[in-house]
Image (tube, rainbow, N blue to C red):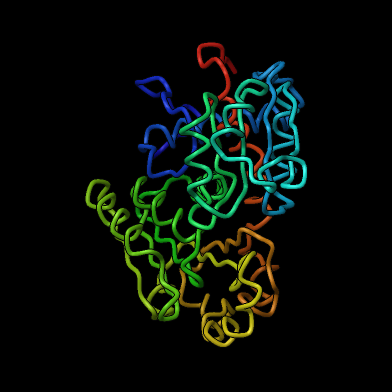
Length: 326
């Protein structure tokens, strides 16, 4: 049985950025989750853990957010550092300054950058041209911070990842992409069901299948929601139209109408299944109120765990790992 509370890595954490979890191996993912659990205990016990004393995190938002902004800003404060909020109106990117120049300038001022934006290339270019850690707070392609919180939540409720099946039902979006990668890295079966034409990127499915060959789990992408949900330990969904897709809302409501998570569908899952949603949610669309507000729902555990896993990421990327003593 996996014990992340006492997990001891045989190697030091060597990652410089968090751009996508595909860059991470299972040991590095476990290091993040283990540290997150210990930081969570300290926070609950009101024990100071100022591991980033004097550090500053620049937080760039070209996409608005509740959970991302609050969790990072509160998290860096609890670690003894300072969070600097920068919307696209506050910096010169909107007026044509290049990502390269922005990365080089901010590298002279701050100790790390978290960016929540549209294009994955912008995140990668910050890492390419800057000299400080870059954290992907969300792009149209990936959402690694959310999925780390999801993994922590699954571990807290299930105690392990092996022999579990996660069913993601809905749009093959950034959350689905990062779930594919993370699940296949840690050896957790994943079955994704999407309407035709809304499946995840083929290149990311191929990456996940390759990961699964190494970890020994199953990766399935299909259109049949009942087969995806059958005997699932976790049922997960997301909104049908993400930020930036508002003009597709009517079309997507029609395409996804048969992909709602409801009591009939969840009866196909295991009796002790948990329901997950990264929020914000549209009750009555992608999920019924009876499911999202029911006894199987762990959506607010997920939200809370954004704080703890992101504190772990910031500590490992921006701190002196030799000084992490908890």
